[in-house]
Length: 287
Image (cartoon, rainbow, N blue to C red; front, side, top):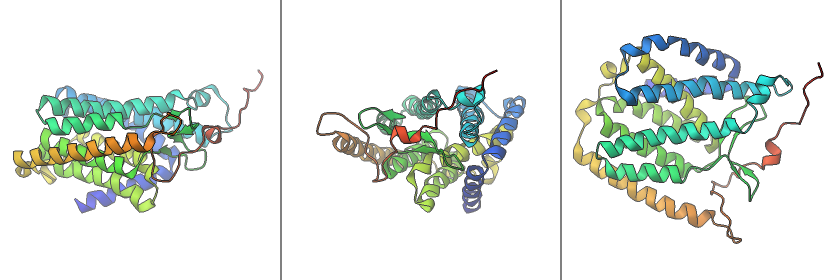
């Protein structure tokens, strides 16, 4: 498990620093789709695989390139510099949390279901007009990271909620899922930049999903089915629910402004102003 976590940490660092190679890698990864049918069973596995790998390759990859080549004004890059990209990525994360939250409801993991709903409520939108802040963005500077300005507490709550979900949904995969969740949690802590959580989560999850779609060795090398325990799941879910409810109270109390407006709280590292995130406006060259 330790080796896999270290591998994933190095993977995130490499993929952050090499947006061109990373784009090509995930684009080629989609060509392996005909092989997935032998390893994916049920609607949840297919939905999870498609909803992770397609956006990683086609949205995150193209968007990072569009900002990397900010002086290139061709139509494709202009298209991927528009606001729809950030809203789409917000939607992908929302969908992935909602999929698992629905699964928690179906499997009667009710406490963790409540925690998942609160995560959805407290996930910042890409932009907030009152303060002119941008909470989701592709960085203008190399390596053009996908940045997400929330709080370290939200990152932690997402991690513990997701771990409890996997533990309840299929304990045999818990050990391997623990590795990808811990790698994503540790990476921004190591870098001392909480806003790197989502890009770390994107690449660790996409890597894991791809490996499982192609052959799924984890059930053999990291089988944790013997760890299943209904009492542990119940207590874990209850603790998650209490922590999430406390965070929900703090979130709205801290985010409410004196003028009655609201902006999500952060950890002191304020999201940049929207005007500071915009690239210089250039017009397409005349034909």
